[in-house]
Length: 394
Image (tube, rainbow, N blue to C red; front, side, top):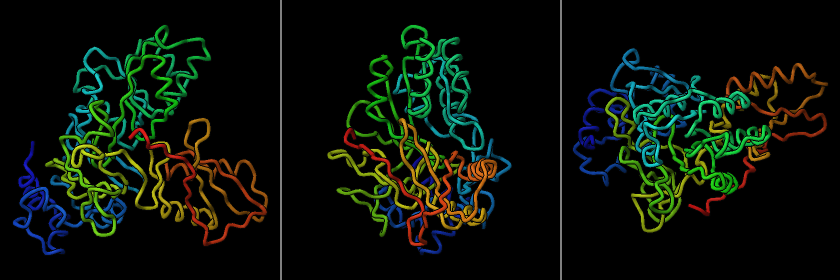
């Protein structure tokens, strides 16, 4: 394990962005003796990364190696550019997958996207480091995916719980069942809430369910290990739960998940994820209660963060400054419906074009609903999350 002092020293010497932030606050390396002193450093907010990266391209000055020495560069909504420094388990998800029982005897269907965002490669590299065979399935193509799952006798699944539900529905439509035509034994979920319904469905099919929490920037943060409530903190990060206003750690209330990653190449130090969580009672510093919400205006939809500021800029460019985006759950799937005002009739072709342009920016496919009589006041909240989050199991 990289020692904290070594991490800070390398970041200070090689990452201009980190050194600048320390200089601006008057903090020196000598002021940080232990994890307890980290609160002295300013929080690097995820929501600030797009602007910082625009000012210092492409990573805001927070990597210790130049861009042309990284293996890959990804883009998340924002836009935020994320480096993959090494070809191996760069995001450290192997720790969680090994606990979930994935090994060299598994054939695993990876249904995370390999396009621009890093999720597909996150799990691909972690699974390969464990010796598992990976099917780079990506997203969509429901019928093709279940055919692959059946023909190749897939034993493991990584992806969102809602997409696995879709695949199981498609299999049942063909008369295929888990344990017979479908040989799935284990599933690892992230990016979405794991509902009681999908847990029960997997249990009936004797599919072991595990989940993890991570971000495109930090990689693995915490994971389900079945040894206690909530999620266990990964050994590769330091997690603090902090008051969003002061940045100081809290132990008995909700706060922002602030992460320091033991990574010499991309040493994110006091990185504010924007996610809200709390420590599990009796496990301060060890286990968190999952993601309980968002600090900023970002809302996670189908595993992707949609931000109100980004959406407002886009809708202004498209000529619909008065809009409202509402996130709901429809048939156990996240849905974002965008209501827009219009004085004249908008044809179907224009709607299709609008949907495509919005998807290009937020990655998620929206439903666009035109209102010819409803007036959206400028004071209305532009991004509304109407989903009900059940955190009782945490």
